[in-house]
Image (cartoon, rainbow, N blue to C red; front, side, top):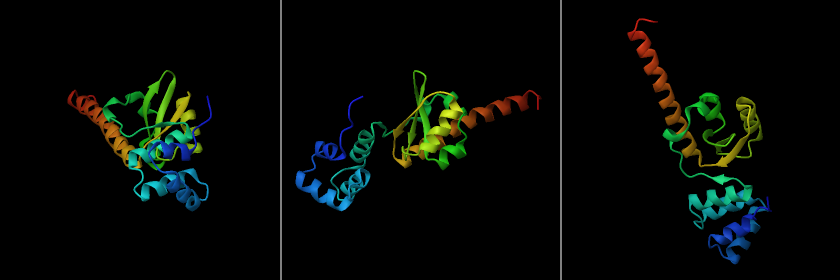
Length: 161
């Protein structure tokens, strides 16, 4: 894997001028994430562009939308909803043997490590807005509990409870 692009080069690729970059850099004290937040606050980047710059500067995938209906149920089953909400994450896709998990904070090493233990397989972080993660988490787990509710209803109807 090659070197990651600098935050400054990613911002420039989104049309931010050298003059604006210099001003932002002076105010951010060298923090790449803070630099992106400042650019967003000043209207130089929209939310999607800011997410993309932050993700690419970390070498991870940016995710702007998660369809809960496309999340494989078996990857949700390993992660308690309380854990997902507390850590602002949602597993959303498989790629080979690897589970892809959207994080609001992809630098949350402890949660990433815990997920690797829960799954017993590789886990790769992606970056998504917190609101996208919470919405996907709520909807995906709600759909899963609906299936369990249907199962329990069927059992009650058959008199197996």
